[in-house]
Image (tube, rainbow, N blue to C red; front, side):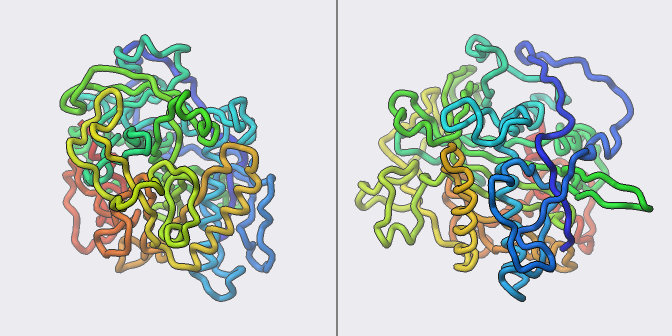
Length: 496
């Protein structure tokens, strides 16, 4: 791996967000396809930030409040030497986990691009985040539009049913409900919190990823059928020099999957300050997506899961970062020791004889109340999937980073681990030999935890199956780059 740089603060290339009337769209200029730099604009302030253990040094980078404004990495900086001596795998894992924490801090910093994380005006220093600002990220429902309409970055879509609740205008998060918003991957079932509410899931993408989809026509089935290239989203790269001239870094494609629990301002008033919250309008489009609707309800959502894929130089299989709220579920070790919290989001110590990680009984379609139809509550336990050394290293990182976030809402979140390609340029394994082999977020892959090959959760192995879209280009069986036609994303399946 090579040394590199990180972004400073904020996100470049911000655009003005235009509020749309209903589903109306702004005029779109029909010109020449954008250049690569327009799809993936250079970053002006990619400043040097050292690895956890800088090359040639035995002293790790101190984890201090200075890192709270270091910004999001354009590309990982990972060294084969470090605190773990000649154990290259362990040293690189530490570097990737450091990268993941910097990613989490940068993406959850206030959307104004100037305020330090945890210094917002809401309880616990909370604030609208970088990824919640439509100038920086777009929900998948705003990209894959009805009838294959061309998406426009500068348009905010507000369904008619939500307009009366959209006060003050533009301040609430529009959450469009479909099966993927309440049912986990491969339709394995919903997750039900201890208050009996459905957990909700959303997928978002940054502008480089959006621009690639838009410019290549991949937002519609018709466009995908006409597409005659290999899908390759732009990758993040650090500044370098070429022919004696400075070449700025670029932020690559980023896709984000988040999970929420519903918070009642009255019933949950004693814990609400422990979550990053979003005021959301939940839109039920009606059949076939939802059994009820069109309808719109207002809910306060608490962030419980945060799962990021970032395509970077030297990680064409993407780098996979996964965080959770610390009170989501206990792990198997805590269950055995009895060292349990008083309250969990998706587990109850009082539930004697409850089956762990059981699928809820059908039917699974939520009503507009978002309450589950029976008394069932998910009893989730985090399975031990990571090797012991990785667990210990991640625990140490979590302790250090949560300490510099002490007193803020963000001290309530923890890194699970980072999955990364240990052999990104392998000629025999298109997955790049994922390390660690398995990784599962208890809120997003509840029912696929474990260490069973081809069955348990692995970010790269799962997304390596993402080939089901309207791509017409034949793939040469000998072409390892053609292994994954969708470039490790299922988002293209949602085109209409």
